[in-house]
Image (tube, rainbow, N blue to C red):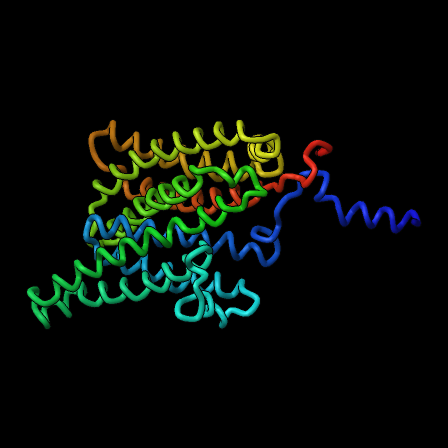
Length: 315
């Protein structure tokens, strides 16, 4: 075998003997997956929080984020986007085994149930047909849309969790981390709805965001510690987050902007005895949203495949 052929064989089969980064979901066209998954968390989280506090404007914005930002980007990523219906019943039973197919079903259900809820919750339409007709339909479809929104928000975590070749993703906590981070994002966005004059209490949203920030900090620390015990390849992912190529996005994007800045502003509001100023709240909302993009980027970027022959792996 010639020297060139030998070099080509070694390059082609590198994945067999050394850890390799996944690039399909974070580089080139894969950037669309990162952006779409972030909008998934933002939209689903906002919808769930709005459902809890009965904010029609929050529900509308959350629904629009999923339907007109998340879904179009996800569909554009597909090689043949208009064939997505083939993953759904009655054309396929893929939903029984595939979280990808379940995600499409959740999205279709959410779009349908959420639209009906929004129609029967719209104040002018309610005045037209009366509360006695509108309210039962509004709350019934609110329950259905809520469960669908939870499915939309969490299925991406299960897809990554089922990739057993990437130890950093193959953690039971991953779907929980992604789901609760999305709810925290929802609290941040609902503050924006309140500041814009919508039907949401800024003080209540700020209090909810405060508790979710603490929970998310504990979850992220627990996740990293747990992943570090699973395998040497998962430790490589953590090292890359803490002091490697992804460290800037982790420390500045996720930790500083996504967690520290909102937490400090929330603490200022708490100890001052009232709400923070509108300027500080807008900074907190913007930082929280940027942190949502940073979280998904970090998770996707440090996904490293374990080698086929780990006993000879060298990185």
